[in-house]
Image 1 (cartoon, rainbow, N blue to C red):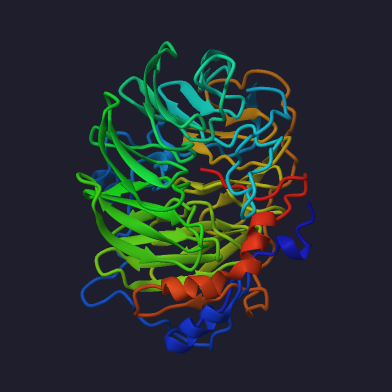
Image 2: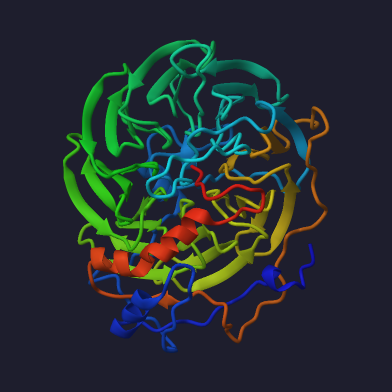
Length: 524
């Protein structure tokens, strides 16, 4: 890769104005378009009296204090995006260089995907997707990596050696394996994972034996979120479920036409994205005890993104290509920013900075209080993988067939590791290692997962020798910049959703070509 090429530029973008004009301009911008807003030397404080949304928004100690014991640590990344808040953060440092320790093959590339998310055109059945073999994001607990595959199995793999410990087949019988795109949650010796067989499965972590299977009303693409003895998960029939660890339903609630979003559970509230057939969407807040709707946070387009919540602000993206920061108590918009394409990956907020990927082939770092761009890192493919953030590095996959490691402060690339196909899976980080799945059917361990010498065989893709870094900052602003908008109102509303996305933009988002014959999909 040539770092002098335009798509490898690192840009420091100008501050953007706020207020009614900016909000109105964003309303006119189509998906993937950068809105035009007036210059301003300062961005107005939209935090409301007595509260700064960036203050301690995600200070590691404070965030971990609020989380349950099933959060990330040196030897564990126990569920999607590390913990029940979808923080995507660990204090543990991952690998500093891009050597591949081992690869584990879950099945031959070309395994048909009968119901890949996001591939349907209105009125049609989803086409087969032949390459998305490991969309599931790994969970890592006490020396074992747990990950789903589209070959219909949940796998347990030794983290140090890459050797299979066991595999568990979903489906109603041994001949009917259904895709496991859901990411596992591992709690107290049990692995919980959803399947396209329309069930939530509980599997003994040591033996791989089934403990129970809970019947949902549709395929379970979303990942289960565990908190305080309850699993929260949605179905692609639009129902949210709360299920206890014995497999008994606590409550269920119909919230949308479809749920692909993995819930964030914070302070007794469940936050999850809505995907509706009329191309509208939002994030809904449900009471964790009853399932009753508490509040709604409007968006312009469908929300497949998994939200994250820190310090009273919910952050998420939508198919209209907007990233939102919305006050959880008042449902008022703190800020919104139009990015270059749909935002399906879950954002991560750490120390006042939000990291978000988009279909615009870019990972963005933004000020969490106002949306100002701090840096951008361009890949050569769409970013559906949700980033994993450590004290010094952001790890993220891309459709460009690479896992990227990016300096958290500067946006400069540290290293990238090539895989055989698109990386839609989200990375899991433990001490000195990062684990991620690829559409080539392999799971990759990068770094030093065993605390000793790297082990195992030649991977189908190897480190490409580039650092993935961006070039000298363009401090003068640029025409390809994503611009900030801000406002006092309660989100963009349903009218804005229809106008902002539009049928043409929706078809574009659904039909985006990944370069390998595959159209749209999204990864948890």
